Image (tube, rainbow, N blue to C red; front, side, top):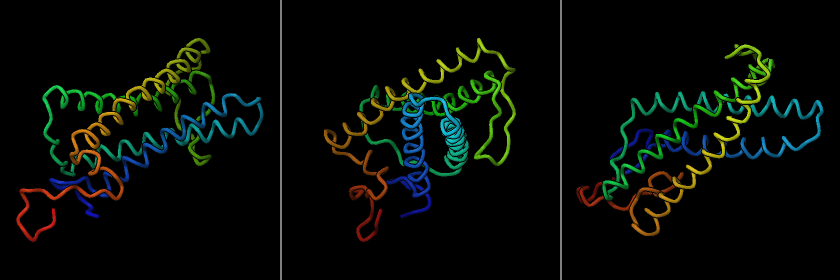
Length: 194
């Protein structure tokens, strides 16, 4: 698998960022809803600390992903009606915005609650806002609703990918699957692999 993206497929690095972040985001969201229903205990506090550290990891990976995107080329979009291309870019933009907003809202919620924020019990991170119980309640609600909004946007993202794969039968999804290979590019000279 290529380290850099080319005209027919995403690179190994880009695919790894995509799938690792997807698993962390969805897994951490499911983990949060599960542990939220638990009775107060030291174990629950430790679980929330883990949830916060995973969220910060997602934020750090997103920043690394942006840096990689700045130096890596990207495969061109598959041919599609103009409105579909605009919708796809809008969905990607919303996903990127939410991937940043969710951990930052969680960090701000934690700060307004007055809790210290440790990254995997290794070091403390600064508070984003002063302790404020009223603001903490608002930020907690915002944090949860941003995740629900992310799930709705993900439905559109996955739906679009499946539409490309099952109806359009193009390489949009295949290029991003961990071991997916694009169909032969007709512009590739004979004897060369795209």
